[in-house]
Length: 292
Image 1: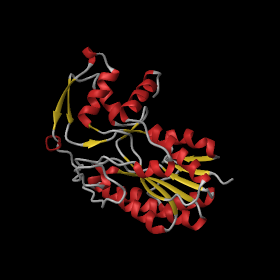
Image 2: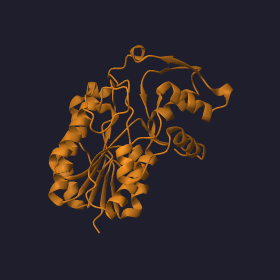
Image 3: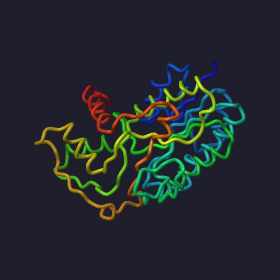
């Protein structure tokens, strides 16, 4: 059986995919040192060397604010690289699994976004990820594109770990209270990806774009508030001050609403991710047990 090529194995999602994909077959895991997605020729060489049956691209340029000043690099990694991967997947008949973002939407919709909603990204990061999606769709390669949101893990750099760190050094924290989304655990994404690939082996023709995020929704402020109540005794919790997006004044604009509807994924694969609060509890258990 041909191997699975996992790109981005050093990231928070990639690290969990290494474990989740193992039961499906041999996994060739490449971190950014083994494969630089800003180098198209390196991508082609690696795919042809490995000759995989499945390519899982968990790598991305995710520095949302920095992308505003590094748009060339963001598009190289998030748009050009997926296009090259899709071309190679089409050439060899491999399946390409790729992850995209809720930030392809402008946030003006008042209900959860479905896959058929028209994207309208508000920042360079979202634009680059949308370009990657469109390149894959146009390639004719077999593909699964999973749009997700607010990804976190017990390892890596993310909101959950940042808040816990800041709680040890600050008595007050200002957190945005007018952006809505679903914090999604990387381990849940990884396990759902593996389960979807197993389901796809049993059937034929499951292909396309799917939303895949945690159940429920919240704001960054309520996320932080819930996190501190679950993780810290009352006397150790910093005072949280709700602020608006305008008050935060980040370089990159964010969508006010980026809640994703996961009904299509559930109906196609019979899988739904846990509620975000349940997964936060599980992540905190891992951290308490000594995860890096």
